[in-house]
Length: 119
Length: 205
Image 1 (cartoon, each protein chain N blue to C red):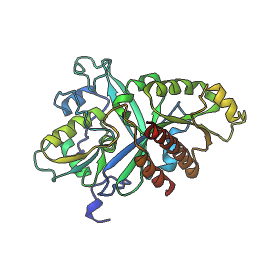
Image 2: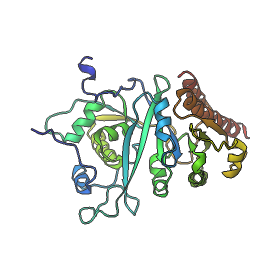
Image 3: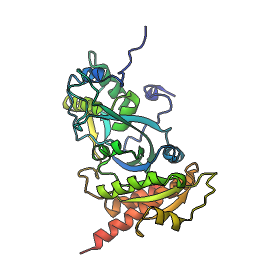
Image 4: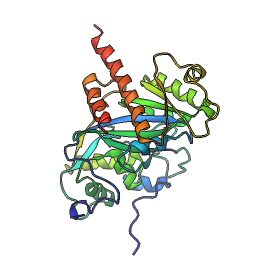
């Protein structure tokens, strides 16, 4: 049997189906929000939800989930919103992403510099 | 490997369980300038590719897509990552500089630490628009000139600064995007610049 493909991203109809017709994503999920699962997948769950829970045994960024699932960011945000509402995941949001205008402080940047120099 | 990692796709290394803070740096530049090469040279994972869809209205999945779907545009981008320490992970995004991409800037890259404009001296026109847009968005940036093997024109940095009408406070450096050490220096130049900006802001009464 052919394994079920997650979604054909080239077809908006399929995206519409995956999200149950919803188009508004949960904006709280930044590209680099780290997602960790709180429980194992259970029977009867939507296959995309199962795959996300399988990936998020360890912290995983939203953008990595999107790349692995081959789904647009918006669709992944919607799916993550579902899982969050079900209490299946927790989200570690970035500090610096609260507003477009917020700029990082020097203490954070010092840590980043230290990390880069140690590469 | 044991069953712990068996669920991960081949080649995907998990982050540390203590990882809690994701950070972003965006590398902007025209097609073929070496964005992905730069990401690859410093990333701890093979660069991945993903995409975002947008409609004319700027909303995500088009609600009327069942009818036509022709207003949907897709913007694709590459990314890699660097674990800075147990808690912090830096994501590097290679973003195309074309016009439609900037409609998605706020949705994708709000909260980014800063940006690198990667320049090919043979196609400097491509860079003007990116610099203009970054200034418009208030995103701090540095400019890195990717010196290709066959870059025989040999413009000096002063000439390039002039050609790009780059203000004196914006750092301008040369790099070889294929070399890890060089890519790392570009990132350090950017974060050094961001640090100076932050210090100036924090010490201003």
